[in-house]
Each structure stands twice: as C-alpha cells, then as structure tokens.
Length: 279
Image (cartoon, rainbow, N blue to C red; front, side, top):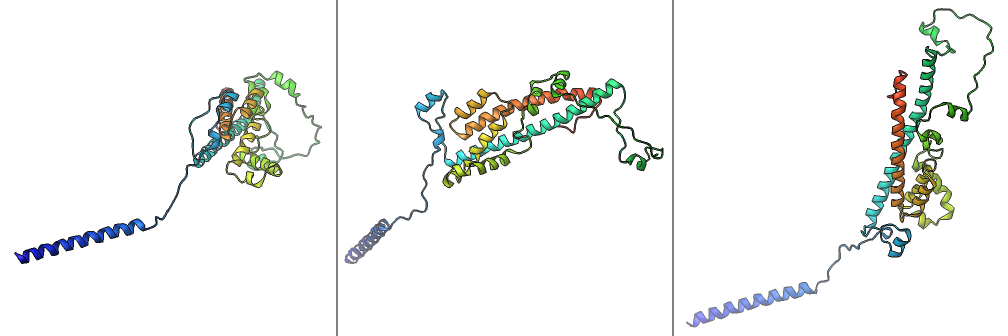
C-alpha cells in the first residue's frame, strides 16, 4: 500500500510539472511582439462623393456608391479608350463617304451621257500593254480648256440633300480631328497647357484622360449643338461622366453616318459601282 501511495504522488508531481511548463509557454507567447506584415486602408474616389448642395445645384442625380482609386482610374480609361475607338470609326466612315460621293458623280455622269468615262493615256502605258495598236504620231497639241468647277453654293444646290450631315463640314466630323487621333491631339494640348499647371498636377494618373475629355468635345463641335457641348462641360462632376456624355453624342453621329452610307451604297449599286472597299 505504501508503494502505491508513493507511485500516485509521483504521478501527481509529474502532471503538475507538465501543467506549469504549459502555462510558462503560454505566458512567453503572450509576451512576444506581433509583427505587422501588411496594412491596408480603403481609398475613396472623391469625385464620386458629392454633397447634397452640389447635386441640387446641377439638378442631377449623384451616385451614392464609392470606389477605390484603382477602380476609378480603370473606369476612367476604359471610357476614354471606348471614345478613342469610336472616333476612329467615324473617321473611316467619313473617308468612305467622301470617296463614294465622287464615285456617284462619275457614275451619274456616265449614265447621263450613256457612255463610259474614258481616261487619257498620258504616260503611254496603253502602248506597252498592247491596248493601243496605233503608233504614236507627233501632232500639234490643241490648247485644252480646263472645265471650271461649280462654286460650292451652286454645287450644293444642284446635288440632292440626303441627310443633314451633308450640310456640315466633313459630314459633321469637322476639321479638328479628321486627320489625327484623340491621343495625338491630347499630347499636343498637354504640351500647350504645361506652363499653366504644376508638375504635381500633371503627374496625376487621371490628368491625361481629363485633357482628352476636352479634346473629344472639341472634335464634336461641328456636329453637336452649342447646348449639348455646354451641358457636357458644366454638368459632369468628373472626367468619366464627361467622356460618357461625349460617347453618347458620338454614337448618335455614327448612327447617322451609317444611315447615309446605306443611302449612298444603294446609289452606287444603281450606277453599277462596287462599294465594298469604302467602308
């Protein structure tokens, strides 16, 4: 019995020592200093958070959602790239319309005279290819009279007006952006504005898109009305909204260009011309 009591006491001592060791390890763990590997803060887009006074001032509904700076920049340049592509599509349609107009005039002239429009062999390629069998003979050239083109006013009056775009400069595209892309015009404008803004302001990620939004509106002046351009300049609270309004006006312009393309395409088909290479 004595031996059993001694064994029980030794087991209790061992259990007590193990419990003390575990308590000591927990205390040491609590005393260790925590190491912060990363810390994240929510960054808000200030342009999407407006006060009630500003919303009532412009009479528009302001979004209540908030987005991080990364998401706001991504959305801004997504809208900008969408507008850039649409501008290139308008340039392509206008270039095709200008070429198609000349083809229609030549086709109508040939139909009216009931003959084909012939071109003079000025460089002698017809002789080389065997198209002309007669040898060249030196003859005295008669003075040629160059037909004078009709004035623009008379030409517009004689030609039927298919769409209001024909009365606008370059079918509503104007002269500002007909030969250049929006990014190229943006770089040019940023160079002119450089003396007026600090380096800190110009180094912002959204600065290029903000300047591009005004370039887009400049390219729409020949098509959009004064009220539409003024609304796009005053109402939007951010460059993203300004680009969205410009995109809507560009979409409307593109739809009108496509309607005019369909009308001229039918006229070309009536004249026997192929027009698949114009659009």
